[in-house]
Amino acid sequence: MKERIRINNQIRAAELRVITDSGETLGVISFREALNEAEKRNLDLIEISPNAVPPVAKIMDYGKFQYEQSKKDREMKAKSHVTETKSLQVKIGTSDHDLALKAKNAAKWLREGHRVKIDLFLTGRSKYSEMDFKKERLDRILTLIPEQYRIASGPEKSPKGLTVVIERSKTGK
View 1 (spheres, rainbow, N blue to C red):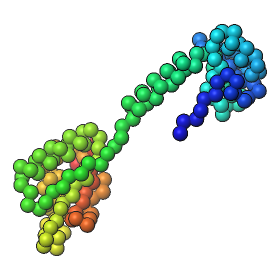
View 2 (cartoon, rainbow, N blue to C red; view 1 turned 90 degrees about the vertical axis):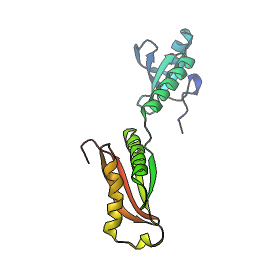
View 3 (cartoon, rainbow, N blue to C red; view 1 turned 180 degrees about the vertical axis):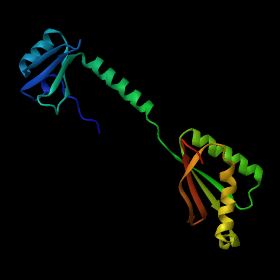
View 4 (cartoon, rainbow, N blue to C red; view 1 turned 45 degrees about the vertical axis):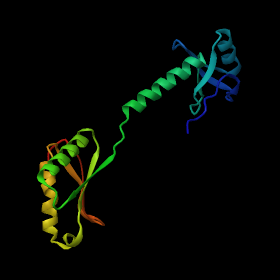
């Protein structure tokens, strides 16, 4: 949760390091002097760094301060990228054409920066086949992916069959 910003009479510190809206430093002055200076300029006294010693306050319009804060928050949100784990499901009998389409999707997700979890879905007696056979079937789709990737966690038994997780790589396969 965001901490609440104190303005004007909500500020509790006896002394403040005060900065004006133009960036000029007024130095460390008492709370009363700072509040009087803000009122003289028809602006607000805003505590911007309450944990500093002494706390830092800025004399500026509170509406302008809120606008600048929301603008900074939007920029930070736009720059952050959430990595998702996308899932692909492949069966032992999946055709080469379908594997190529799934590999194309996996490459697209890797370019976007997501991780891709590929499940080799096993049914019936294919669950009991040789591990080498299952790995070879999983390698069929991995070789079709045109994007460079690295195996983040790989081939592991899962309740449905065999699972491998790949992610984007800077070097190579």
